[in-house]
Image (cartoon, rainbow, N blue to C red; front, side, top):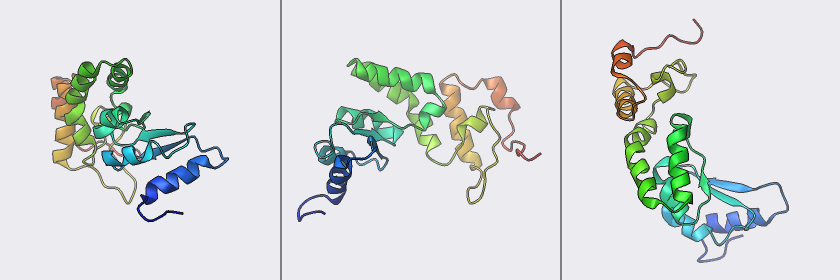
Length: 168
């Protein structure tokens, strides 16, 4: 379906988006911002192009993407809403400020961690083939959450890094 000189992902996205199906959008989680330029004019106008990479979501939207399927929003939903609303109303200064504030947490979350367990919202155990986050990663998540005011110093001192498994 591709022709010589045409990007295969762009060609496929254009083809699939034009099918008479229930496909309403695409998630692009590779972090390659140059690809959105190739794709934005190829996909059917009724389809949405969504980032799956929190670290580049703001730039993704600036290049024509429609939003983000976010991991970060599961941990700091209000801050993500603030970022996206600032972007929607054209307040890029505020959107960039929120993005910078969230950057350490974004980096820590994508290392391997489960911030919800650090915050005490769920157990830290995981199913195979996954493994619990390393101590250094959990510490980075704790530091980022504390910086955002989401984890108190007292709670940090009381925390153990090995939560009780769900099965007990």
